Figure 1 (cartoon, one colour):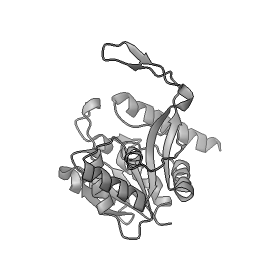
Figure 2 (tube, one colour):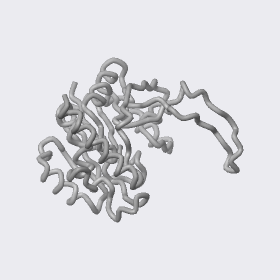
Figure 3 (cartoon, one colour):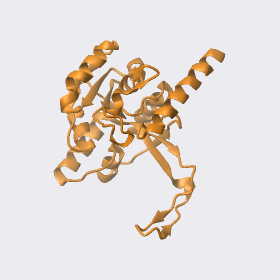
Figure 4 (tube, helix red, strand yellow):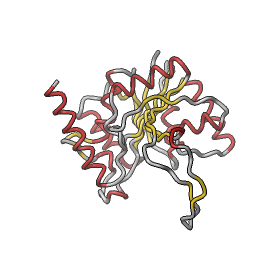
Length: 233
């Protein structure tokens, strides 16, 4: 099965006051976006990287510097919404794409094991969404703070990426959403909207998303811990 990954790298650093796109920030001296792309190169046929329009050259240069130019088939501009950026990535995929994974460039700690689980789920069920069970009690509340409901915790999962799909399914879901003006926060929701079944697979609690400054510190700590585990093993 020819699988390709679309890596979304058009984010920003506003919430961590970084002054630059957070995916360019170094983690143990390697840019986050490179750490987000590299694990897929051992498994997938190729990658499409989505970047902000004014950062295309910077992204291409960085990809080349770390030896990923052959794996990354194209670097394309993002859109207004995340959904638009994924659509641009889909449009750039080679014709032999049978499976498509969508991954946030701000999740630089993704592992080969997670990617393999997503691909296995695609082969068996048509899609696979990396997710972890929720450990905290969740409340639904009004803007005033008044609690409306306490959902059953054992039925709640936090979505991660990669989110993987058979190529025909994700293309069909995006087309329907585009035609009907539906906007979702992730690709799994587009399949739900199109009436297609969505299946979760095991993610990884270390597969964090870089959002605030504390996430950078946590990611650094996780990388150090991984290095120490490798030495012991």
